[in-house]
Amino acid sequence: MARFDVILMDADRTLFDFDRGEQAALETVMAGLGRRVAPDALARYRRINDELWSAVERGELETGALSPVRFARFLSEEGVGADPDAVSDRYIDELGRQAWLMPGAVRVCARLAKTYRLYVVTNGFERVQRARMAKSAVRPYFADVFVSQEIGAAKPEPAFYDEVLRRAGVSDRSRVLAVGDSASADVAGANRAGIAACYLSPTGAPLPAGVSAEFTVKSLDGLTAFL
Image (cartoon, rainbow, N blue to C red; front, side):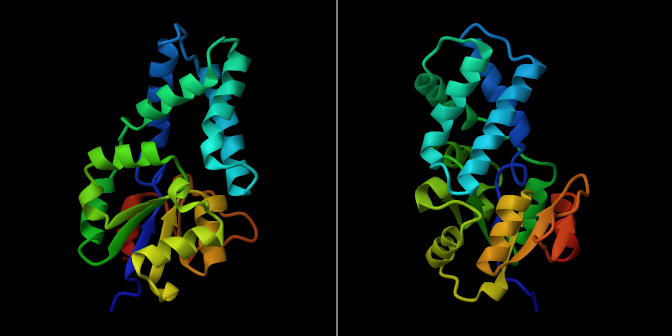
């Protein structure tokens, strides 16, 4: 008998090739402003973005406020005199069109869906995540998609998982596995919610002290070794 009934799957860098989609969206938006995104500019954007998403994880920033703030900072550093709210809006629309998947995503999800109920759980923007999922080849394999902006709490907060499991009709947390690439959001969130975790670590980097996972894999295909 399978140990789990439900799998909660992260979206960015777990199902979706977020880095590829992010770069494509940023290049399109900045091209509209007459600017090229050089490697150092992309690195600056990602630094700003990572800092702000970490603030969301710590409960210091609301998801809805993140995008205008990141573009205010990024445009300022780039010396671009554009309205950050308008740029943010265009970027979110463009990012929602980027549905590049990680290697093996369709194959693995199709196999897992035969045995488990699959759900997407993501710290992201509703417009982005739902647009990507709607056009993605993995959408048929997921029972539902749960986005932090809709839930009103973000991973790793237990309130996020409480609401996800309530909506999914799950009462036995011992039958749930969370899968994701972020030690601070996915694995720590599962730990705090009393859910088993699988850490997706492409480089094989270990988890930090105080965070633990029942399983560690380097790719989605690694899930099929124990599921």
